[in-house]
Image 1 (spheres, rainbow, N blue to C red):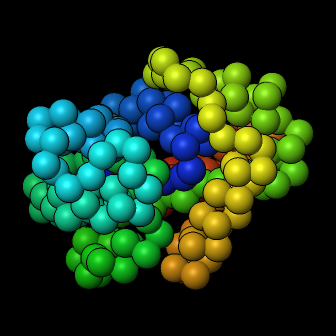
Image 2: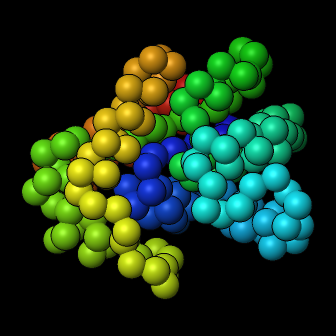
Image 3: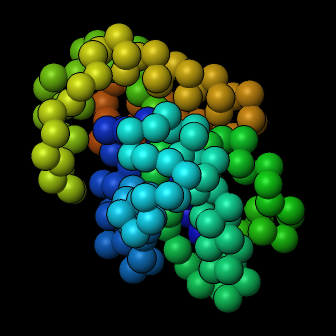
Length: 185
């Protein structure tokens, strides 16, 4: 079983992965670590950390897909989180693999961002990992990113979870979904 968690940056992917690790004792991989390892190990890797999400995602996806397939083939459990798992990538797996993947695509509603930008989103973006740089996106940029991501999810036909009011309460719905899917596997 492989659990994939994808969302726009600062949505709580790493926090969710950490909670899943603690609940199920399943290791997780942050794609940010893979990205930076490849970049620092080889400046000619085909991207820079400042490139567009889709550019980086397209470079990393063959490696991530291979890792997912290997974990499934070896009957190993793994959680992979990052903004570089694009919704349309889920169509890259045949049934043998897709039945062993629990994909979670997560986002914030416009109203949630407007009401919680400073007090929750920016304030809690370092809850699991220490980021040395300040939040550079404005509310409107974050709203646009989440709206575009939601549209991509809906177009790809993947399950999308939108936080609208209460982060903790609504995130519990995502954990319940994962638990239900896990039981079916």
